[in-house]
Length: 242
Image (cartoon, rainbow, N blue to C red; front, side):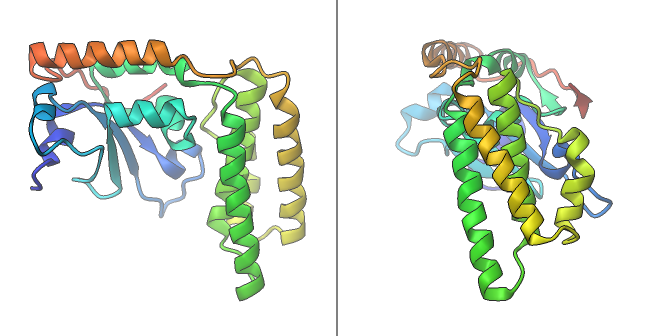
């Protein structure tokens, strides 16, 4: 066991199934990716060696963030973090985890236009460069960028983040198998990017997230962790659909 592995095992407040199983793009060969949030005991920050901001493991395909880092990234509309807050399958949740899920709307803002769209654009450029070098793109990242454009557009249009791809599943899986011509994929990507841009001006989302509300909650978490020894009173829900 690493020096800090106990933080994930003993102080996780929220753990969800992520990746292809959350997106509805899983196959029989898909791994089960876990993403989680832990609260390091407040006293640990008084030491010379501070708690890590994130940790891999201890299970395969498991990655977790310390709550402060999680809030920082989510406020900046990082797609990976926002998807944790809206994941359809909750693997573990404590009372503090429930509070974090209830706080999810405070993290949303029109910044998602830049983050979802920017990531999709960078991945598209890499896919095109790989196509020019190797004669074929890496299809899995292409599916991911299309999925982000679909998700980001719907979020800007409706104010709700939908992680599961829904009706787009079959077509996205066909792209991943390399069954859709590159030109058709590019045309789909262009239409999605145009719709994402068009959604920005009339989005119901606020211009910026409610950072004050998030910070007030984070301070309360630190205070309660100091009084109770971090996250006592774990209540778990195994793979519960939301």
